[in-house]
Image (cartoon, rainbow, N blue to C red; front, side):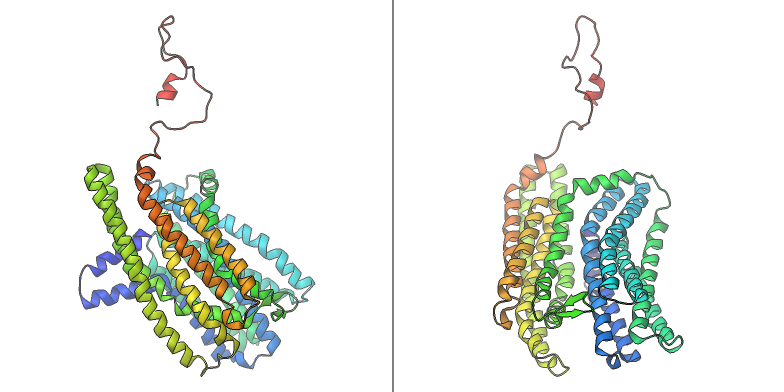
Length: 492
């Protein structure tokens, strides 16, 4: 997280209009540009290939396939990416560059294996029960693996600060996707929906291969220490669980409404709720700028104060340490409040424009009833995520895990209760969950502020821990005139 902040500091410290615009553009490229590139490519294929002319069943099968591919690939990759990024960062800090390849190999195998365990039974069910075409199901499976691999390899390139290359890879991949969709449709005369699905599959694989080739080009040596990566899974299981719970919390309220009687069932396989899912997507887009604001207004300012504090701990006096700590937490609080104020203004403006424009272009009825409540929920949720990242900053895995439990658990129970209320309150469960998780994270950060000295100064160890037989208790044997066996091992 600090890498992008350092880069933005260098840009904004020039204090010119051009550098400010470049900094905003840089943060945009790093945060949401890849997602927008994919969305624009799909919309372009819709228009050029005439997707609106496709029959209702074929259109819903494609839409449901893409929905499931995106949601579950994100659910699978997000938890492991946090641990893999920590392992890679630690090895780079220790200058053990030969350990990066084992991290990439183990991470890729782990994520693709888990993705297959989840996807294969589902797609077999789609063939046997849903009676879907085998070729279509297999292509969906490959598209799922391609996007999963894309998400998993993004983290390695992000740590290397390859933000521009990542965006270029998505541009290349979606250009390939768009061109291939035209070829499949107008040259090979495939159906519109399958042309798009097959083109997206190849496009995601192209992006993943480019990302993987780029990061492997930086690390040519291989230490073959694969067990160390697996050890990180065990050591930081709370980090995996916390990030999984947060990611699950983003979608679990959608799953609740998928189970409602008015859901959409396609081929007895794909379950969704079009009105609620579309309202969720619009609400997320309304508040997506929070990601950019967090990068530009919070992280890059906080990093300097965090660095000052760590330097004071290493070589400063007690008074200097206390001043640096107080300054760091004052900056953290003020920047979170600043983020909330600015994002509130942006969200209100986008919300008002959405209320006016969306009904004109066809979004009305139940979607617009659900949208306002979810817009509030995602506004609070993105603010909560900024606090969650600060918990990661201070290595508070217990706090992050508790945050995830509250966020997911309350969202599940609250959404079940809200589903019995009028449509305008359907998003209330998610909103309450976001607010409670935000409140919990805020007070957890305050607790860290009060106990930071214990965290920093009382968790270290003087002697290195080893697993071996207990050495003899004698330090020196006066009768034999020598030190007992095992003494040297203990003292080292």
